[in-house]
Image (cartoon, rainbow, N blue to C red; front, side, top):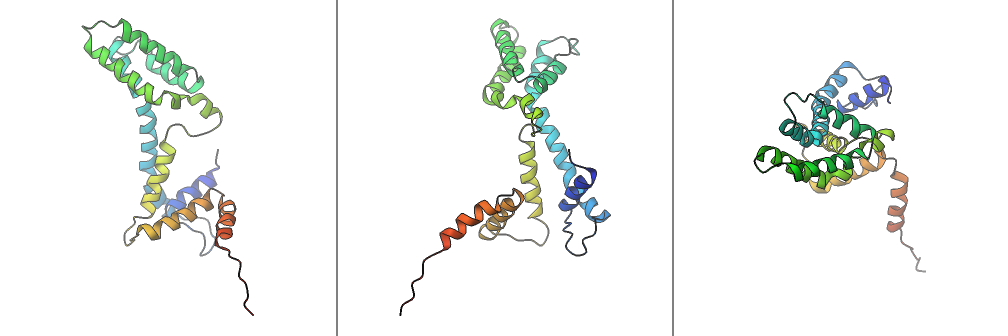
Length: 200
């Protein structure tokens, strides 16, 4: 868990803070700019998680009594975050529903089919308990937010990039931020070295 100071520094970095001019802590202007950029990203992360359980919610809305008296939506959420095997039980429950729902209930059958289709593609990625225990981000929100932030940083007013210019800059920045600079730099420099023989 980051400290308040570290979180403020991250937000200030988004607002253009470098700390190179005076070395002072970030001020209100860069923090305000950073908050402007990060607000949509927070909403995106929340939306991505909610979209992943939306399929189960649709089944509950279609198949369970009004207002979900047994709180199946809450059960889905709590089990997915606490038990990696919950997704398998949800899958089996949906399969039983698909087999037992009569044809005169097309709305319910459609919701179950959509949920099964979703889980067939993404079920292995929904073992959230293991990720949460390892303090890893859930779903693709973190990656998408990173891409979104990067796009915002290189598309500011007055900036103009071309692929040959932007790609090397982003590659270098990625290596530095991921602490892989040394492991990448040595093979690269080795490939650029050539033996030179002096001619008498």
